[in-house]
Structures are given as C-alpha cells and as structure tokens.
Image (cartoon, rainbow, N blue to C red):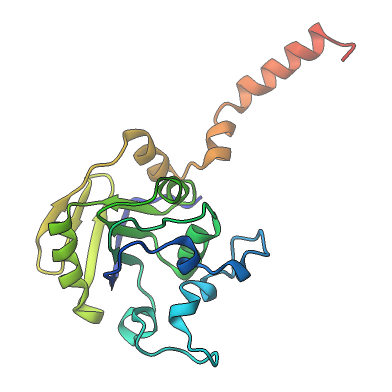
Amino acid sequence: MEPFTTLTGVAAPLPMINVDTDMIIPKNFLKTIKRTGLGKALFFEMRTNADGSENPDFVLNKPAYRKAQILVAGENFGCGSSREHAPWALLDFGIRVVLAPSFADIFYNNCFKNGILPIKLPQEDIDKLLDDAERGANAVITVDLAKQEIHGPDGGTINFEIDPFRKQCLLNGWDDIALTLRNEDKISAFEARRKAQTAWL
C-alpha cells in the first residue's frame, strides 16, 4: 500500500447525502477481484447517459475535476453493501482523500485498508470546503496527515481527528498483510519451534 503523508490536489464537490456503494460502483462491475481498472466505473451511472455517452454535467466529467484527488461529500458516504470495490474504484480513479460529515462504518474501515484517508468533519467545515471546491481548477486543497491539518485555497486551516493506529498505518503504508509481515521473524521462529516439537504433524 502506498504511504500517505501529505497530499495537495484538486477537490471535487459532491454535495449529496447517502451516497451508497452501488452508486460509487454499480454491481455489474463486481465480477473482477483485481483492484485496477475500476476507475472507469466510478460513479458510472451518474457519469454516463443511458446511451453510454459521457454526462457533461457530472462533476468528475468537468475538465477542472477530471484529475481530482480529493472528494468533498455529504453525510453517510459509502452506505449500503460492504463491497470493497468501492474504495478500489475511488483509488483507481485517483481519489486519495474523502471528506464528509459521516461515513458508513464498513466503507470507512475499507478506505484505511486500501490507502484512502476518510476524514470526518463537522458540517460547517464541509460546507466551507464545498464552497472552496466550487472554484474548479483553483480548488486546490492540502491534506497533511502528520499534522492532521487541511489547508484551503484561501490559506485557512481545518484540524481533523484520526485514530492514532490508523494514522500510523497510513503514514507507513501498512495494510493488513504488511502489518503481519512486520512480525515475520517471530512467525518463522514459532513455525520452527512447532516443527521441532511436533515433527509428526
């Protein structure tokens, strides 16, 4: 998993509440277990028209936001089914940070496991960031995980809270496998002892 330290990027406004995982990536794209290639399916039903053409009114199709790395959203983001493809699609598109007043628990946990930083903020801070994000290509926001600070395009600073363990994992790029492998020497020593003590197994 790629470490997350500081990110400076364009923020896209998505002022919708209850954005569920089927909206993030529709069920017909869940046939793969690969984490790559899903960015094209992100918000597919909102990004495309019925005839398959691109919907120019959807925020991520607008020129200023095509390479957005930060998403400013409404409350209860990521609700619905527990599909891990949702953070995979966001990450494959290029989104590394999602800012919202609240998240569905499973989606929130899945973000951390995949290198995405979900930040819960009071609604008044989200409203300010949504206003900043409306600036298009000038909607550049900096997220500093180590300092737990968000810097807006006008120079203002918003502080955020994060679980210390999750913060440490993101800063170091540790997913569940990497965390396990940090104890590889202890695991190997245990296996060697067990083999010696129970050779008949």
